[in-house]
Image (cartoon, rainbow, N blue to C red; front, side, top):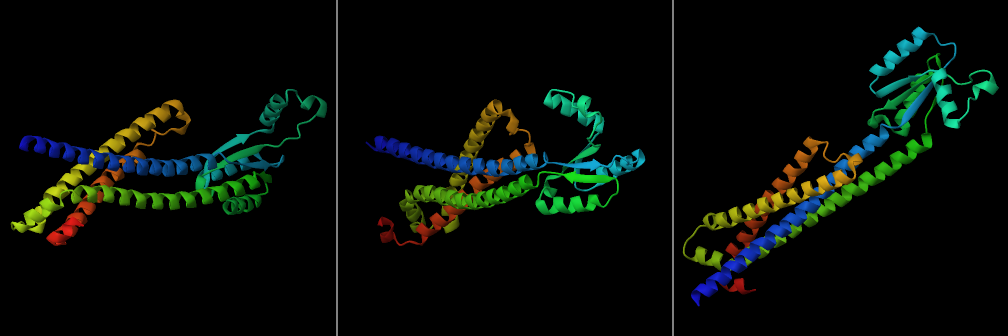
Length: 292
């Protein structure tokens, strides 16, 4: 009879540990997934911003030496990512290919201008900064005009700001929920051993001595839950990257390392603090209060 009860207790204990690990793993997996979405949203935003092109059209009478000097200055400018020079001949050939016929045959001359396509660094792709760059460039005599999609830049900036704000709010809210859920799981695990805690205290064990094995066990469960969460995230990333390689989810190893490291530390820190305060609560209760 005694052995049967002991086996039953061990099964209950294993079941309790399993539930805690699964709870921690699930919550940390969701937190990690949200963190990756937030970080990848920023990198995707940067990617799309740096695809925006500002086209500088040059005057026909601009000297070649002046154009080369201007190109060299653009390459050194802090806002420039890349520059591409397109001659009026290249532009005409491209346009003819796009429309499917040689428009120069009936016009008799090439109305297009030599141009330089500039892609900007992402932090400069805002309506205000692009307008400032445009004014700065238009001072030069070799420039005829500057063209870029101003409504698109305005819309892109507004939507990115809204998205960033909501992602920040949602991340904070979900992190709080994650902490509460893990804390609840740990508290329930400690609650099941409240009588053991009180018995150890009654025979003279110090609070630190009583807390230590509970904290160490919970931290182990936290680390195990974090490892499970990281493993699941890695499997998901490989699956998504295999089916949608354009997202380049596995290209940024430092970012992934930071996310996985934070998940692991969260698993340790939350379980440590939750167990510390849960055991402290039961250590401070009177014996008759353990039944409520």
